[in-house]
Amino acid sequence: MIQQQQSMTLSPYIELYNVVIPKDNMLRQINELVDFSFVYEELKERYCLENGRNAIDPVRMFKYLLLKTIFELSDVDIVERSKYDMSFKYFLHMAPEDPVIDASSLTKFRKLRLTDLNLLDMLVGKTVEIALEKGIIKSKAIIVDATHTKARYNQKSPREILMDRALKLRKAFYKADESLKAKFPAKNTSDVLENEISYCQKLIAVLEAEGGICELPKIKEPLNLLKETVAEDLEQLQISEDQDAKIGHKSAESSFFGYKTHLAMSEERIITAAVITTGEKNDGKQLQKLIEKSKEAGMEVKTVIGDAAYSEKDNIAYTKSSEIELIAKLNPLITQGGRKKEDEFQFNKDAGMYVCKAGHMAIRKARKGKKGIGKNRKDAYYFDIEKCKRCPFKEGCYTEGAKSKTYSVSIKSAEHTGQMAFQESEYFKEKARERYKIEAKNSELKHRHGYDVASSSGLLGMELQGAIAIFTVNLKRILRLMK
Image: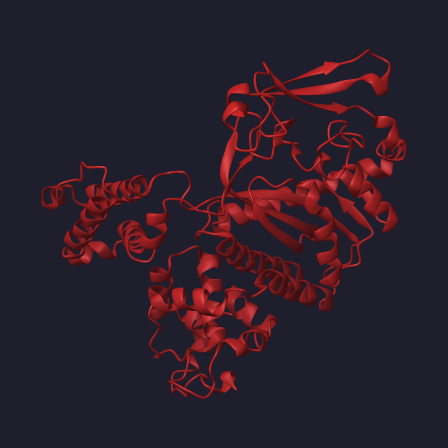
């Protein structure tokens, strides 16, 4: 069995851990809380147990990824710190004098062992299981929301990415020793990517030749980032952008290029389900998946709390048939039963506008029909006609020669009288106040665990990042509640 391939070496220094690592150390507490043997079970089919040399313990590799997320460091820096940080070595199940892995092994582990593995549901489910066993989750309500993550490669050209990271590195060196400026290679002035890569390689070589100054943390981190970009990410740079990332809208005036993570969280602030999509996807369409995934993880769901994006007609019908309370205010713009082409036009609740299947957002809206006669009134959304003329999906959508392109939605709020009455109740208003909790959780993911920017390209890479980040914040929350 693969768990027998490696174990902590018997060491005369092993008792040091009991001396230098206190009982309340977070990494010690995680080791005591979680039985990581589930990693062996999930990964055993991805290792050859008979041929070749022994593999690095997969639990140890998995824990390296956890450390990387908890402390938000690069592969190189997390391995470097594990050389001397005793709490890291204890967490990794190593003897104090054991050598560490090569940083490149983490890249191979991610690409060879973790691809095509439903890691997201597995890790979320594991933490929910622990929370239920410890009696932490007692509520029967989930709070739902979506948070966005910008693509790592954004919409910059490969050369612009390299220029930006090289500039940050040079600035860090200027602050440490401005005299080094004279030793730097001449900057690349052409638009050729290969020339920019060559310049960055020369810059790295010059700086590493300076020795000691490269060990300063403010210099070491941007240096490692540029090295990883030139080496490991070279293939992605030549693609020039993240092929999976899409444009999403945060408001009518602002947008982002990347992904969305749709979350469900218990009232105790334990994430119970997650669905990761490209940036343009509608929030409300993920509600049913989040409820089902939460149930599969072991949650009993009787109430769902969300914003207006989740109050569309299908969700009202689904929650009613499932005997679930839906605490989400109606929005007459997204809860229509009679609008046409529902699959081609999706409502963006942040911008208050519809987006066509090409990703273009309406530029204005106008209400039509007689006031007081609800069935005749419509909201007309106007699109940029110049974009429609050039759109690859214009057939059957835009008529050649037309002076405008609109999409109209009938206002039929009478169809939702039950939900309208419910949302005026004191119970509804009280439960709706719980929604702020998930906004704080989104902020924690972004600002403490690097979830504001994708750490790699592609939807699979985003799912891996999400799985580790959510596993981390759930464990931290469980430890806090256990105190």
